[in-house]
Length: 259
Image (cartoon, rainbow, N blue to C red; front, side, top):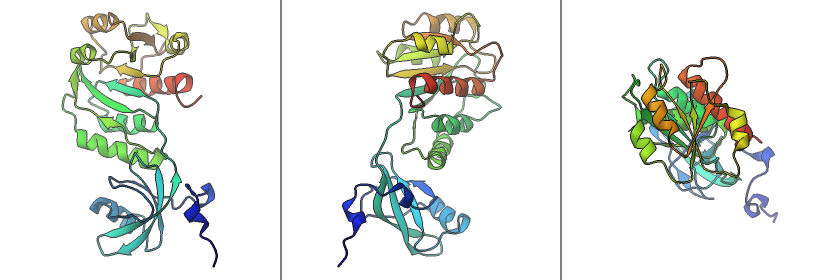
């Protein structure tokens, strides 16, 4: 009787990675486990993607890598996924946090989506003196982060933290973690040059402000912190969300996993 090669391999070949649909689940993942997707995920699989019994799905939980599964049982509103083999081992993202002031015209969930795609580990809303959008829907942010992780091939979902005041953020900033301060004042070092000048450093954060930027007192308080690296993003004035994504992109290209 022939030997089941899949059973002997820790990971499936890339050519046999499974279906195009990826789902984040809370369940443990290992060979033989049955996973019941949420009502929303089941609706997406069965009625949006038109998946059927026997179709493949890729699952990840942020801990045990990505696993190939098959739709084993189907009812009108639900289904069961049978976990078969690991298609990709767990891989982390750079230890990069994004501390951002929520902005009114661009919902925080948009920032959550794009920052997730850019490999951020932690999303930290920050309330500043000029912050207009002081109410943050954390559940919506997490839902958008999960969707972005599913679509981008990421194996984890960033941690979504409760909003904090700027002074609390600075007072409680972890020892050893550098903070890239996107200073719209224009008298800082260009971000690429500033990052190139820093020695061996693995723990980072990026701080961006609200509409209208940080006020004078806030800028002074931020720049007084020894862990802060003030930078400029160039000669043009950017929207707050654009500044956040631009800073993350430059950081990834110099210090992150784009190198």
